[in-house]
Length: 433
Image (cartoon, rainbow, N blue to C red; front, side, top):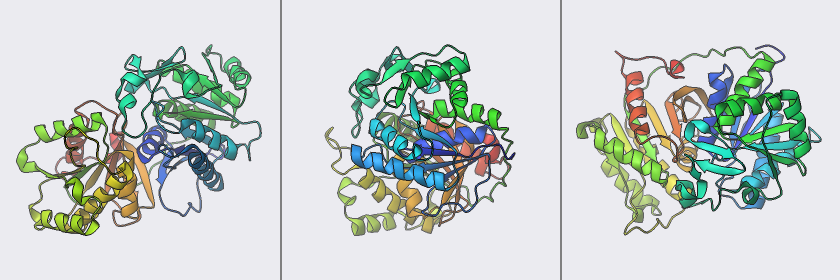
């Protein structure tokens, strides 16, 4: 890397959001990692992108603000001189508090900082047009995000989602647009319309001109544009790191997300795989808050580990009678992670597919992973990486937000991983980007 290349810190509101964003930097040649342990890296080279997870999405405002600020202070300590705030593309959760926390921390080192909010992710159907947040052309409140069981979004009006902010469109002149962003920021936040990837590239060019006092706050869509723009401005060179040795051919899919999209993708995977190649571990809801009983159930399911097929799906229980599950998403994820731990201890596993941010965090915490080195993506919104540290070190991990992707996304992921893990067909996961 050249000395002028920046170090980008990414603060995300959940694990899958962190990987969705940092993979955009990996694709553009940055050395990209999601940091998971408590220890910060001793030395971070210029041209690196470091992501941290705050878990702020479902937090109350005060807690989310402090969690975001604390994470960003840690990123600054690690050497970050550019900041990207990853928020939900449909504005679920404590976005306003996350933006406030980012400003609290970043202004300590960059006085006069302001946040530029644009959650648009056109590749996934999320756009911001005339101050209205849309999903595949319709109002966000009519999408699954409006029915989210934890953090539903009640309106597409950005004036209500972020009260007191101004929404603007850009001209295409980076210098003029940078000044327009500063002028419109008012109390420190400005919102920008974007309906296409070209719009995001226009915004990224303006943010480069605006410099480090401008904090981009968006989804993986804007992250991709910023990765390319910052790389061009800082002369980032491609990072080459070794591929890991394979640890087995079995794939464990962990579905903690309660999102309608994740459910449909799991059902499609189960319907399309040969029954001989698939085992589904789905504990009853009554076991989830009984650790000893859950462990006994899992031990019985895993009694003959060599008989496990090439794909094992560990998923949340079905709600009974249409009613919601009584435990929180985090509690369900923690219970599923304990089943994953038992699976890893008893059977050879080459790859983990983690669907849903709570589950991804719980599994990576349970295995004491220190970092996830991001190597590429299976497809848009489905990053792939290698675990560093802990009991799953060297295993391939794929993360996916519950609400992203076509109904075939999980099947496509398993198919691609099978090619990667099968010796006669293997190709490096580094090439999957």
